[in-house]
Image (cartoon, rainbow, N blue to C red; front, side):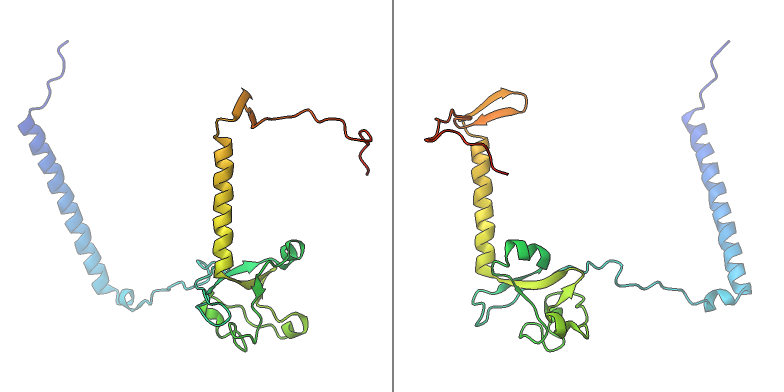
Length: 201
């Protein structure tokens, strides 16, 4: 049995043009029907679109948009961030100062907070009885001298580079898969004067 004959290029081109022509006619037909329907129905143009509006859906409530500019208290400016008082009680505030309603960076009722955060929290009626801090959830808006902040960032970078240097140094000995010694490794400790004592609970 002979194989089916393939259509020539001209025949295939003619077929494609016919299909395109049929598609154009169908599109024109639908456009005419739509225009006629719009002319018959005057309510289509009078319908008001219902625009959904909720500016808070895309907002990060803890976003910080500004810093404190240079002034008498902070000659190099200050960094603004949200801090957890519970964590700070254990670690200490280490230079961080909470914003409090009535101070020069917050304003009497928080009107200056929009310089630092996009959606300032309202001042609570009883906040003056507690600590008067600007808070959201369990965190407090705080500020830190920019020199201290940058020094700490630099120290973190130096410590990280030092750890990476130790990890990649030639003093590292690989004992097996996932087992590495850095430097001298485990050392034999001499017996202390008075002998070893059991650990106290």
